[in-house]
Length: 324
Image (cartoon, rainbow, N blue to C red; front, side, top):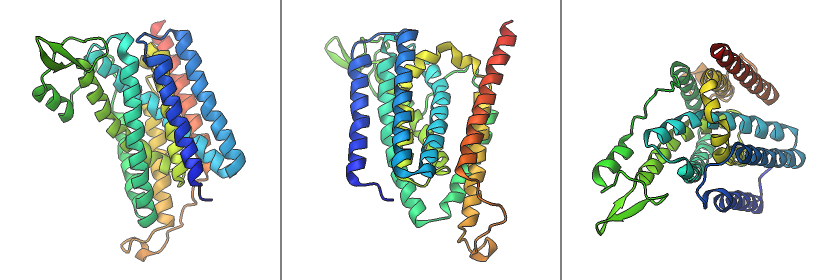
């Protein structure tokens, strides 16, 4: 089933409307959200995503409905892990709590733009080159290994990438924040504030996050519309989730390991699919390889949810025992 242009247009317009609403309702007036505010709006965005998924299920069928929910859960989980990096960046630049929502909203917009570009590139590659699934699968397995080997230490420091270093070196800047402004005037000279540097840092990390998330969801569905909407709804509400989780992030000690297992699982799933559609002449003479059956989407969703539940419960139990 091809998704009509008007459905794409209406969906994109709805997502943009939610982003604009987020700005006027939360970001326009700088403040640190209370736990009640963050929790309420986090639930709101999750409910919106679930309602959309239920509608997609009803219109497009059982299989596509499960694909959407599997993709949404995976992307939401990866977004939570990304918050670890955001916490480190915010702390490194000493961003005032009242202005962090603006930084996060800009990060969400940049992430949505980048992922849309990568989704289009991924769809074009899949359409023309079946062997791209080998690359996606191997990349996810490598990412899983890297994620499992890394640690989210509370004392971990942010290492500026070349974009941040270039901005700090070549752009005239001040060390003082001027509200949430990106530039300020001092002695008649226009200078950038640390707020702009922080946004550059967040935007640069979004590129790396997109490189992980797009191959992961293409391992669960081949439909660009589902890939886009699962990503978009996973990003919506990320601002509120940042403040809701707060110190809880440091207690999710096994989350990265759980996500590593999920990415490794999806990587293997992609390689199995690549073997089933194999056209590379140096593998089985260019013929399909069907030694292992493909993993059905319902099993993928069950595995993803199971791993997340186990790692979350284990993390909280471990943190509780250490605190005791």
